[in-house]
Length: 290
Ligand SMILES: [Zn+2]
Image (cartoon, protein in one colour):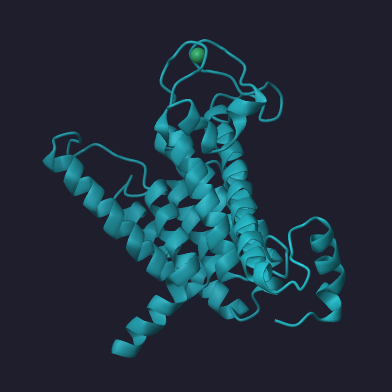
């Protein structure tokens, strides 16, 4: 490997710090692997930290509590979490899933949502590129923001069966940004996307009252604009597969009666998350089979 002008200065600093041998030959490769690893760890922790806040949103928004005021505390004993107890993913493992003050179990959901956030950030960086030594591109960050809003909406829907309109507005705003950031998805495709799923869902709900919640229909509409027609169809298909499987499993286990309703938002969120990364490709593959 040869030094070019750009990295000569960096190499000089690294040699001074003892990270690089005099010739810069042997340790350089290791160093690059190390730095890459460090960047991916940073990406994961960034995503996990943001989803840690999503956990706060999921718990506090339905209760009408402030999202910014009031420090994170144990729901059982009120113990205010120290800085060491606030490291996403890691603190949960170190505490073995229990409050350090009262020993009450901390819901595993916190941990998994944080892990999902870390994974989502890394996937967005990998799929939508990142500049040299930067964490993520603007495109990747926009998609990550969409996934974060989906996660918050899904979590609250699961608990309360309500998808707050504020999330729809946020996705709509991201959809407006997407017009410029992802010009490969044209306005016509976005327009079709906004109606191709939401209108049939609306008609079905008019025929069979309670088939879908208003929140699900609106989520399908704004996500259709954000994702485009192909991806939203694939994402909704996944949502029905997952939701249908869940309903059958719950009915078989007698945990759900025939007339019971369950939140569909989490399944839509899961389907649209998959669609962000693979929706168009799956749609093109399927069209190719026809
Ligand atoms: Zn406690």
